Image 1 (cartoon, rainbow, N blue to C red):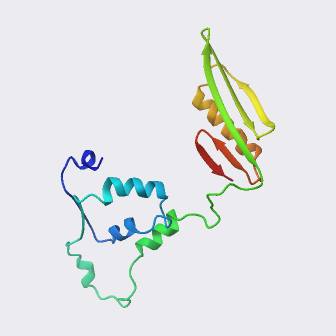
Image 2 (image 1 turned 180 degrees about the vertical axis):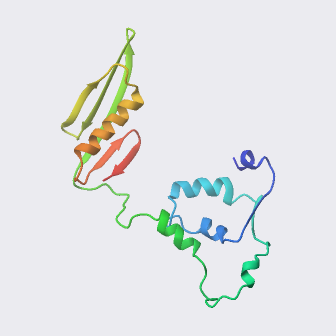
Image 3 (image 1 turned 30 degrees about the vertical axis):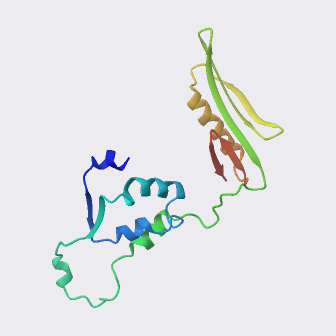
Amino acid sequence: MPDKLTLGQEIWITTPHAIEGVLKQPPDIWMSNTRMTHYQSLLLNPPRVQFHPSAAFNPATLLPDPDLGAPLHDCAGILEQVHGFWTDLTDRPLPDATWFTDGSSFVRDGHRYAGAAVVTETDTVWAEALPSRTSAQRAELIALTKALMLGARKRLNNYWTWETQFY
């Protein structure tokens, strides 16, 4: 895959920032494990990608600076602040409630049928037939939206189409 992105050529990444260190730091800081694996396999590990410090001269560095010791900013700190995970975020389901949402649409005898539902393992929380023009994707979103509205102010796990959300 990296060859598709680089067309077999070398890539030199030149920046005054410590971007290589930021990109190669542990993924729990600002990037999910899945994304980190994806980026490492695409761009970070190939031998054709090289990181270089900027050789450009910045005349502003010659100006007198009374606070020489303090950097203007900390790249890693900014990333953690902007993209960091919530401290209470977990990959384990919450014990309070588990809901499942689904929406579907199909055509029978030239007529489209659609519906959506929010259920638990044993009960139906909400189910409804949807207008005939509703696509399967829209039905999925309607079910998820309804689950979020019904689950407001509740701690719940919502499973839908291979994805999981914890609220």
